[in-house]
Length: 629
Image (cartoon, rainbow, N blue to C red; front, side, top):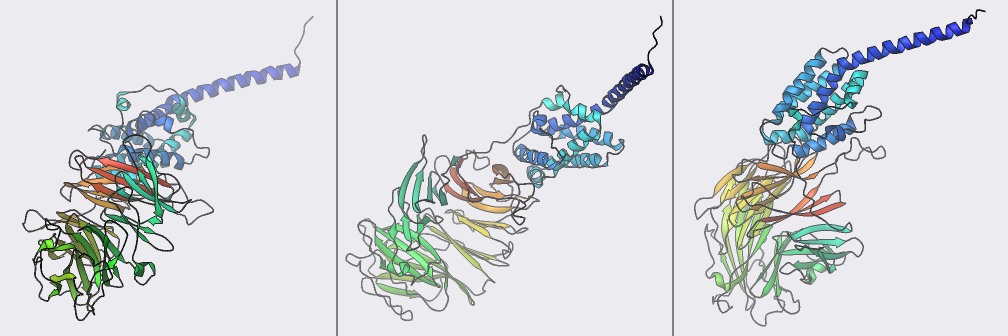
């Protein structure tokens, strides 16, 4: 008996044979595609390992569901900003250029690979430019183009064929080009301040002042070598930025107070009644302690006001004899304490106000030990500038009662009051739209007047002598941006925030003519902002914010900047939130600094990111500011 298969059975087995053959043919085809295209994915992976480091594949995981390269680009750019901040040796990134060229050459002959080839060519260009200079490498990392090109290249290669996707996922042994370590800069973490901190500022590298958002009171935060920082309540108010590391202002809705910084537990001093009642509006102020008294000077509506109160005992403010003149308003004031005689008493028998109408370039007081404090004034008006020294005597015993001010036109002084006014410098040519700043370092006062075309620097020592003033120094214009002014006893530093404009540093060395050093900012071809600047022994520091990070640069010759170590990496969003389309992509940072010269230079850095992240970082240098830890 013969059994014949049915027609359906024949068709079934026939279809099965066809399916098996098709599957075999497809597998053969896929194997050939993998054999053809997997090396391209392998080369791309080796390029990533060389440029990014051994963990490149781990960093680029998981694959974006919509093959959008932006999430991977953000990761790569964040990593690259730390890579370019660390010395890599001569082999990086040069060893990666040949790998990128090999990938680009392969893609040039691959059909339908225009986007991948364009990204590979861009990777070659950026890798070649990384080796030009340290600041050039930082620029490449900051503009984000290298990370974007690498991410685009990787996505385009992976999704191009089955072979490249298999090559991305299959095991790949390490070769010599990707065994070399790619060093990554460490971001200093510092100490995170309480999230309730509001209006935080440095008093010293180990001392932070802030207002608690809950109790609205000023707090002092002292960082010790070990253990948690000590927190203490100082009083009502929010601390304003510290001036000259001598005092801070506590601002409240009712009245402001002055906080001396001689000790961590200093008690706030209520300001004079005329300030508390709003009769005087503080535009700029200075504080000093001298001759057993505290001195408080400020400018109100273009007039100078100087007050004193005993350093010990109850607060009893006495307004000194300012004898303000009506012709030219005061633009800036610097308050400098002067030494006392050995007995602690004034040694000059002069009294009253002495007016020296003729300017003297190196006028000194008749007897420096007579005075408890000097107020140096920079006046600026339509007729030009002048620098004056007002020397105030140590208050006499029993004179702690309000002293009546004389009429401005008479210049007469009340009994037992000693004030000397000296005109030190006059400039007949006014500066257009000038902005004036003052800075005090020890017993030395510095001024700068910056205009559209000129700078004018002045330095005055404890005796009122002008040390080699340079009336005008043409080094750039400042009308387009903000500027930072810093000083120590031998240098004045001006850094402009305007793009394309430099700053200047003036050095006063051993009685010789001062040396003016134009000080351009680090040559970063990206948008950047000066968050702070500082003078430290032998060097200048600039804290520069770029689109992706905040970096500290150092220079010892005021021209060649080194460093660029990141203090913060800014994790910028790829696009603004849809509910806030006008929101900035980059939140940015703002820094305050405090430099204290000790056996080992320490610089305190207080960073605030969009009002939420506040960290106190203390850096130190052992090589004159070239490297910071």
